[in-house]
Length: 264
Image 1 (cartoon, rainbow, N blue to C red):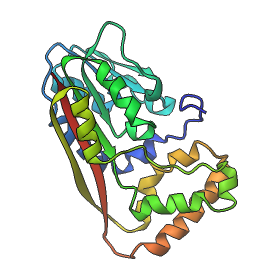
Image 2: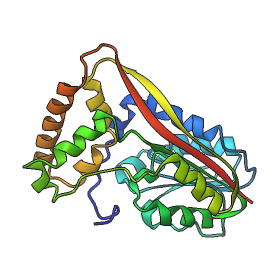
Image 3: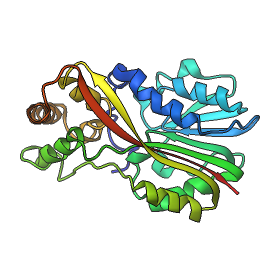
Image 4: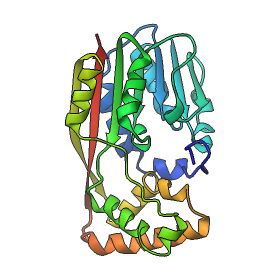
Protein backbone atom coordinates (compact mmCIF):
# COMPACT_ATOMS: atom_id res chain seq x y z
CA UNK A 1 0.00 0.00 0.00
CA UNK A 2 1.49 3.36 -1.00
CA UNK A 3 1.67 6.34 1.35
CA UNK A 4 -1.07 8.05 -0.64
CA UNK A 5 -3.42 5.08 -0.20
CA UNK A 6 -2.89 4.53 3.52
CA UNK A 7 -5.14 6.19 6.11
CA UNK A 8 -3.89 9.52 7.43
CA UNK A 9 -2.57 8.91 10.95
CA UNK A 10 -1.09 12.38 11.43
CA UNK A 11 -2.49 14.53 14.24
CA UNK A 12 -1.30 18.15 13.91
CA UNK A 13 -2.13 19.06 17.51
CA UNK A 14 -0.18 16.09 18.89
CA UNK A 15 2.78 16.86 16.63
CA UNK A 16 2.78 20.49 17.80
CA UNK A 17 2.97 19.58 21.51
CA UNK A 18 6.75 19.88 21.30
CA UNK A 19 6.80 22.59 18.66
CA UNK A 20 9.92 24.45 19.83
CA UNK A 21 11.96 21.25 20.04
CA UNK A 22 10.76 19.99 16.66
CA UNK A 23 11.35 23.33 14.95
CA UNK A 24 14.97 23.88 16.02
CA UNK A 25 16.39 21.33 13.53
CA UNK A 26 14.47 23.14 10.77
CA UNK A 27 16.25 26.38 11.60
CA UNK A 28 19.60 24.62 11.84
CA UNK A 29 19.03 23.12 8.39
CA UNK A 30 17.82 26.44 6.98
CA UNK A 31 21.05 28.07 8.23
CA UNK A 32 22.95 25.86 5.76
CA UNK A 33 20.88 27.08 2.79
CA UNK A 34 21.97 30.12 0.82
CA UNK A 35 19.32 32.54 -0.51
CA UNK A 36 18.08 32.06 -4.06
CA UNK A 37 16.48 35.42 -4.91
CA UNK A 38 13.65 34.95 -7.39
CA UNK A 39 14.14 31.19 -7.38
CA UNK A 40 11.82 28.19 -7.19
CA UNK A 41 11.73 26.05 -4.05
CA UNK A 42 9.93 22.90 -3.00
CA UNK A 43 9.36 21.94 0.65
CA UNK A 44 8.89 18.15 0.80
CA UNK A 45 6.82 17.12 3.82
CA UNK A 46 5.69 20.66 4.60
CA UNK A 47 3.21 19.70 7.35
CA UNK A 48 1.01 22.62 8.38
CA UNK A 49 3.03 25.05 6.25
CA UNK A 50 4.05 27.42 9.03
CA UNK A 51 7.75 26.71 8.37
CA UNK A 52 7.25 26.74 4.60
CA UNK A 53 6.47 30.42 4.91
CA UNK A 54 9.72 30.95 6.84
CA UNK A 55 11.64 28.98 4.19
CA UNK A 56 10.13 31.12 1.43
CA UNK A 57 11.03 34.39 3.10
CA UNK A 58 14.58 33.38 4.09
CA UNK A 59 15.45 32.08 0.62
CA UNK A 60 13.90 35.13 -1.09
CA UNK A 61 12.24 32.78 -3.58
CA UNK A 62 9.59 33.86 -6.03
CA UNK A 63 7.74 30.53 -5.69
CA UNK A 64 7.73 27.96 -2.89
CA UNK A 65 5.50 24.90 -3.06
CA UNK A 66 4.86 22.75 0.01
CA UNK A 67 4.13 19.07 -0.61
CA UNK A 68 2.56 16.77 1.98
CA UNK A 69 0.46 13.61 1.83
CA UNK A 70 -1.48 14.38 5.03
CA UNK A 71 -4.84 16.07 4.45
CA UNK A 72 -5.04 16.80 8.19
CA UNK A 73 -1.76 18.72 8.05
CA UNK A 74 -2.61 20.53 4.82
CA UNK A 75 -5.93 21.74 6.21
CA UNK A 76 -3.82 23.91 8.51
CA UNK A 77 -1.75 25.33 5.65
CA UNK A 78 -4.33 27.65 4.04
CA UNK A 79 -3.42 30.57 6.30
CA UNK A 80 0.17 30.45 5.03
CA UNK A 81 -0.69 30.52 1.32
CA UNK A 82 -0.18 33.54 -0.91
CA UNK A 83 2.73 35.79 -1.76
CA UNK A 84 4.39 33.06 -3.80
CA UNK A 85 3.60 30.18 -1.40
CA UNK A 86 1.17 27.40 -2.21
CA UNK A 87 0.55 23.83 -1.09
CA UNK A 88 -0.24 20.57 -2.84
CA UNK A 89 -1.16 17.12 -1.60
CA UNK A 90 1.35 14.58 -2.83
CA UNK A 91 3.47 11.58 -1.94
CA UNK A 92 7.20 12.28 -1.73
CA UNK A 93 7.87 8.72 -2.85
CA UNK A 94 6.23 9.56 -6.19
CA UNK A 95 7.15 13.24 -6.52
CA UNK A 96 9.30 14.02 -9.56
CA UNK A 97 9.36 17.81 -9.57
CA UNK A 98 7.20 20.84 -10.37
CA UNK A 99 5.90 22.00 -13.71
CA UNK A 100 7.90 24.78 -15.26
CA UNK A 101 11.45 23.48 -15.10
CA UNK A 102 14.03 22.54 -12.55
CA UNK A 103 14.33 23.95 -9.06
CA UNK A 104 16.75 26.14 -7.15
CA UNK A 105 16.21 24.41 -3.80
CA UNK A 106 14.81 21.06 -2.73
CA UNK A 107 14.20 21.21 1.03
CA UNK A 108 13.10 18.22 3.12
CA UNK A 109 12.88 18.64 6.88
CA UNK A 110 12.02 15.48 8.88
CA UNK A 111 10.19 13.89 5.97
CA UNK A 112 12.18 11.64 3.65
CA UNK A 113 13.03 9.17 6.42
CA UNK A 114 9.52 7.86 5.67
CA UNK A 115 10.52 7.13 2.05
CA UNK A 116 12.31 3.83 1.35
CA UNK A 117 15.29 3.22 -0.95
CA UNK A 118 17.41 6.35 -0.66
CA UNK A 119 19.78 4.92 -3.26
CA UNK A 120 17.12 5.69 -5.87
CA UNK A 121 15.51 8.65 -4.07
CA UNK A 122 18.59 10.88 -3.93
CA UNK A 123 19.35 10.70 -7.68
CA UNK A 124 15.70 11.66 -8.28
CA UNK A 125 15.98 14.64 -5.92
CA UNK A 126 19.25 15.72 -7.54
CA UNK A 127 17.66 15.55 -11.01
CA UNK A 128 15.07 18.14 -9.92
CA UNK A 129 17.77 20.78 -9.41
CA UNK A 130 19.15 23.22 -11.93
CA UNK A 131 22.95 23.73 -12.08
CA UNK A 132 24.01 25.39 -8.83
CA UNK A 133 20.84 24.15 -7.11
CA UNK A 134 20.76 23.21 -3.45
CA UNK A 135 19.52 20.11 -1.64
CA UNK A 136 18.86 20.38 2.10
CA UNK A 137 17.67 17.43 4.18
CA UNK A 138 17.15 16.76 7.88
CA UNK A 139 16.23 13.29 9.15
CA UNK A 140 15.79 11.73 12.60
CA UNK A 141 18.55 9.20 13.32
CA UNK A 142 17.41 7.91 16.72
CA UNK A 143 16.63 4.29 15.84
CA UNK A 144 18.88 2.95 18.60
CA UNK A 145 17.10 4.81 21.43
CA UNK A 146 14.59 2.87 23.55
CA UNK A 147 11.81 5.15 22.29
CA UNK A 148 12.23 3.59 18.85
CA UNK A 149 13.58 0.15 19.72
CA UNK A 150 10.67 -0.66 22.04
CA UNK A 151 8.17 0.20 19.29
CA UNK A 152 9.84 -2.38 17.05
CA UNK A 153 9.78 -4.98 19.85
CA UNK A 154 6.08 -4.48 20.58
CA UNK A 155 5.24 -4.57 16.86
CA UNK A 156 6.71 -8.07 16.64
CA UNK A 157 4.67 -9.48 19.52
CA UNK A 158 1.19 -10.99 19.36
CA UNK A 159 -1.51 -9.70 18.93
CA UNK A 160 0.11 -6.56 17.47
CA UNK A 161 2.15 -8.48 14.89
CA UNK A 162 -1.06 -9.98 13.51
CA UNK A 163 -2.85 -6.62 13.50
CA UNK A 164 0.09 -5.10 11.61
CA UNK A 165 0.37 -7.98 9.16
CA UNK A 166 4.01 -8.45 10.14
CA UNK A 167 4.93 -4.81 9.50
CA UNK A 168 7.70 -3.31 11.65
CA UNK A 169 8.52 0.33 11.07
CA UNK A 170 12.12 1.45 10.61
CA UNK A 171 13.14 4.84 9.30
CA UNK A 172 14.83 4.63 5.90
CA UNK A 173 18.14 6.24 6.75
CA UNK A 174 21.73 5.42 5.90
CA UNK A 175 24.95 6.48 7.64
CA UNK A 176 26.29 10.02 7.43
CA UNK A 177 29.24 8.67 5.45
CA UNK A 178 26.88 7.09 2.92
CA UNK A 179 25.14 10.41 2.27
CA UNK A 180 28.47 12.25 1.90
CA UNK A 181 29.58 9.75 -0.73
CA UNK A 182 26.19 9.81 -2.45
CA UNK A 183 26.19 13.60 -2.73
CA UNK A 184 29.69 13.55 -4.21
CA UNK A 185 28.72 10.93 -6.79
CA UNK A 186 25.63 12.95 -7.75
CA UNK A 187 27.68 16.03 -8.56
CA UNK A 188 27.31 18.10 -5.40
CA UNK A 189 30.67 19.85 -5.48
CA UNK A 190 29.95 21.53 -2.14
CA UNK A 191 28.45 19.66 0.78
CA UNK A 192 27.90 19.68 4.53
CA UNK A 193 26.89 16.47 6.32
CA UNK A 194 26.68 16.09 10.11
CA UNK A 195 24.96 14.20 12.90
CA UNK A 196 23.69 16.46 15.68
CA UNK A 197 22.36 15.45 19.09
CA UNK A 198 19.46 17.53 20.40
CA UNK A 199 19.09 17.07 24.15
CA UNK A 200 15.44 17.58 25.07
CA UNK A 201 14.49 18.20 28.68
CA UNK A 202 11.02 16.73 29.11
CA UNK A 203 8.94 16.88 32.33
CA UNK A 204 9.15 13.08 32.78
CA UNK A 205 9.67 9.79 30.93
CA UNK A 206 5.96 9.53 30.11
CA UNK A 207 6.44 12.57 27.86
CA UNK A 208 8.62 10.48 25.56
CA UNK A 209 5.44 8.57 24.72
CA UNK A 210 3.69 11.84 23.90
CA UNK A 211 6.64 12.81 21.69
CA UNK A 212 6.59 9.65 19.56
CA UNK A 213 2.77 9.65 19.35
CA UNK A 214 3.18 12.77 17.21
CA UNK A 215 5.72 11.23 14.86
CA UNK A 216 7.10 7.67 14.95
CA UNK A 217 3.89 5.95 16.09
CA UNK A 218 1.94 7.40 13.16
CA UNK A 219 3.70 4.73 11.09
CA UNK A 220 1.77 2.16 13.14
CA UNK A 221 -1.45 4.14 13.57
CA UNK A 222 -1.77 4.33 9.78
CA UNK A 223 -1.92 0.54 9.52
CA UNK A 224 -4.21 -0.47 12.40
CA UNK A 225 -7.81 -0.12 13.46
CA UNK A 226 -8.38 2.32 16.32
CA UNK A 227 -8.91 -0.51 18.80
CA UNK A 228 -5.79 -2.35 17.68
CA UNK A 229 -3.75 0.83 17.80
CA UNK A 230 -5.01 1.66 21.30
CA UNK A 231 -3.85 -1.77 22.48
CA UNK A 232 -0.50 -1.28 20.73
CA UNK A 233 0.04 2.14 22.30
CA UNK A 234 -0.84 0.82 25.78
CA UNK A 235 1.65 -2.04 25.44
CA UNK A 236 4.28 0.35 24.11
CA UNK A 237 3.78 2.77 27.00
CA UNK A 238 4.05 0.03 29.62
CA UNK A 239 7.18 -1.48 28.07
CA UNK A 240 8.91 1.83 27.50
CA UNK A 241 8.27 3.24 30.98
CA UNK A 242 9.61 -0.01 32.43
CA UNK A 243 12.99 0.53 30.76
CA UNK A 244 13.37 4.31 31.02
CA UNK A 245 14.75 5.82 34.25
CA UNK A 246 12.16 7.70 36.31
CA UNK A 247 13.99 11.02 36.23
CA UNK A 248 12.42 14.48 36.36
CA UNK A 249 13.21 16.38 34.27
CA UNK A 250 13.84 13.58 31.80
CA UNK A 251 16.78 13.98 29.43
CA UNK A 252 15.84 12.71 25.97
CA UNK A 253 18.79 12.80 23.55
CA UNK A 254 17.65 12.78 19.95
CA UNK A 255 20.10 12.34 17.06
CA UNK A 256 19.41 13.91 13.70
CA UNK A 257 21.29 13.94 10.41
CA UNK A 258 21.56 17.23 8.57
CA UNK A 259 22.91 17.48 5.06
CA UNK A 260 23.26 20.19 2.46
CA UNK A 261 24.77 20.15 -1.01
CA UNK A 262 25.11 22.41 -4.03
CA UNK A 263 25.41 21.06 -7.54
CA UNK A 264 28.27 22.12 -9.79
